[in-house]
Length: 242
Length: 383
Ligand SMILES: Nc1ncnc2c1ncn2[C@@H]1O[C@H](COP(=O)(O)OP(=O)(O)OP(=O)(O)O)[C@@H](O)[C@H]1O
Ligand SMILES: [Mg+2]
Image (cartoon, rainbow over all chains, first blue to last red):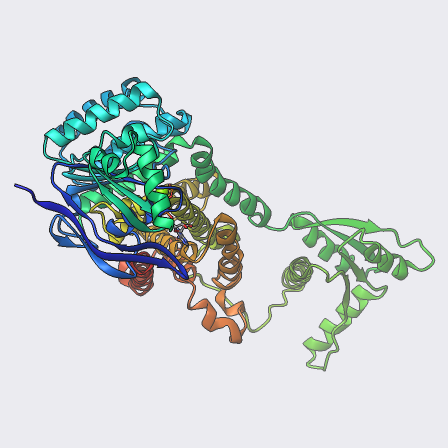
């Protein structure tokens, strides 16, 4: 059974003259880890913001979990981790998590369980009561990720979740994403690390707002006749520019 | 509206204040500082105003009327007298010089034939003859109207008393003030409610402007908006938090006013706090709207004087509304602080209850609702 949890139709976002996202057609099935890759400014963040209702599409449409964007009815089933560190630095780790849990009206019991698991995953259990302002950059990123996952969303958008995170923890993150996937959750993430991109089920390559190639990492490499995803991306980018 | 989410927003707002000890301390000590400054500056009655006395009166058979008046004046502690010697060649210009050099605020001069003139006048009056009053000249430094007024009032009162006690001369008409409200009220009773309202408004406005600019700049506001929380709940949560801050502050001010300055609260302190709460959430809404038109803290804080000065000057905090020029009165009626100060004053001095101050409270509540709704709307529009 394949059910599309993210569907966009010629989704376009302009900022004045600049076309940040150009006629994007996405279809992402449930239980998939989907990676959006592409150079700086290629429109990954903009696409995710439009889907999460933070920016209004210039034209085209998007549906999440079968509801037209901006969603309201299914909003509690979706999670979002922005690219910037959007957490409260003047609160503790625990208080941040509790705030976001509160936004989803989680029960105390559910929250306590989720908090314990997530703190373990981001390896910050002993910093639970530290002010976020006193954490290192990578640690803050980890807290931000936990805030996006605290309510156990079935569809989660993670904009560069592993930036600034050390290799050991990154591996831990990917194990966690695999867990989410096996629990039937859908993960849409962006990354600049090709070793992460190959771990995605489907990779979408963006350039100048357009989707230039999409498929499993293997199929992309095969189509481009390369052995690494990086080369596949470079080959595709060159083709796109002709 | 989901109450739990609103409370969660309120809680997080208060929690960040709690972690920021200095700001939290500022919130408590700023109003204390304000009431103390204003209290000690304006609170006391005038005391020990320097006044020079030049007594040239040679007296009469029963002593000197001038001496009697001087004794009366020196009885109170408003004026501090220094007697000028009459030995100078030109005592009058000496007296004037004392005022000119600002060694005294005023010089009171009794002429040579003062007692004789007074006695003549009284005798004439007893026979029903026309009288031209003899004069006590007061040379005044009018650069401080309060002081000038106080000096003239003291001297006039002393003259009246001497006429009554020495000559049994009772004026046929007496103005007899009878306090319906404010028996024993002093200036501090008048402005304590004003300072309280002003402090609550200033702080909530500032907190709300800065918090929201922060929320926007850090992306946390955007992030919150991707959760089920609504714009209304965010605005409501903040209003609740800052309303509580205003309440704590006002409690501190009320306690300080009562303990330090013996301000008497005739009516219900709870009603005063309710008024301040309404003012607080209204100001929060105002701050929010201002901050939505600002790109950063600097731009937002630029709005502060625009709101603050009219509020201080036109809302009746230090001067009664009657002192506001006719032309500017309509402005006064658009300032929320006007209603809060008016209500607090009526409660604290007149002892009025909800039955009397409900119109002001209704206006404050209405303003709060309108401002908060506009705030929530300004968030929605942005998306
Ligand atoms: N608010 C905005 N106003 C104007 N232009 C914008 C705005 N946000 C993004 N852009 C532009 O849209 C384009 C796409 O930006 P976007 O942030 O989506 O890129 P990205 O793929 O996420 O890049 P990165 O890998 O650096 O995160 C860029 O050219 C950017 O300058
Ligand atoms: Mg980006």
